[in-house]
Image (cartoon, rainbow, N blue to C red; front, side, top):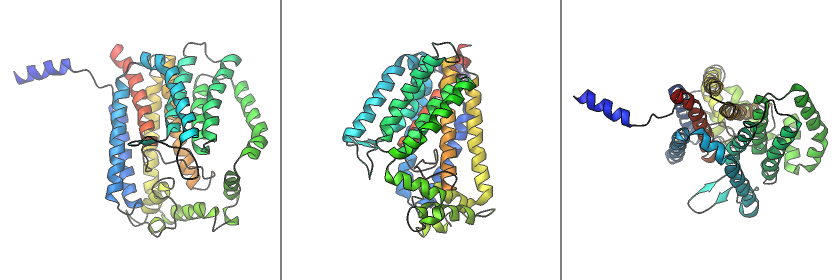
Length: 367
């Protein structure tokens, strides 16, 4: 009797459109993040608890996003994109921050609107290209590049070069997945190379200094070069098996800058060594591969393009942060996804994975 009642109740409940494998992988990564954050903040329980609450909110957003039918996202895409643009304009007018206007403070909530554009831009491009023949031609490409350039330009003005690069990458990744012809790709690369002198002339002085320091950090070891030098020392000192959890010296003795945000990967490498780094990177790889698999199994071009670009954006996050703290890229202030301390970034990434799961699940439940 009890079994019959349970089956009836189960039949009344809507299925949770979550992918169990991807969900478990994300939970494992967030668990690792909280563990490393506990050490990086010198065992600050209050700060770790606050991050845990943010991740919990992000999981709730993921759950909600996964339940919304894709046709609604496709219909809402223009409004969401315009809303995200207006928030970027509001940041330039009313934003707050240390040295740069990147945040909006509305009392109870303080958030970074540029993070929302990492979802809104791919959503807009996917909705546009889903109705057009693929691969995109010159006209469609010009429209898409214009849609990418507007938010990227507004983010550069904050200034926030790291986020601008990731937003641009999310849009370009979608164009690549749309089957962009190689001749167009090479033409775009040529334009980028030709524009480099203009970009250099329009960079802020501190941004130019970052690039020069990246090329030769020892030229300013006590200034701009300090961050990357100390980060590389932390990464290298971990050795094979690391110094042990909470035993990092570079962060605890305050040699390592921002150990709980941009440079948390250095703390991970110092405490868990090469073995720990490989295991965490394997976890990231599993998330990316599972996400791309779900994207490939979506019902239509809209789902495949949007899901694929969101997963690749997560991958770009990882590559840029790891390359940054290892001295392979200039320091641009990109957090380690779902590990670094921060709420807006984590929520936007989890919202993206909610979209990926929801777009794939429609195939499963609709046949």
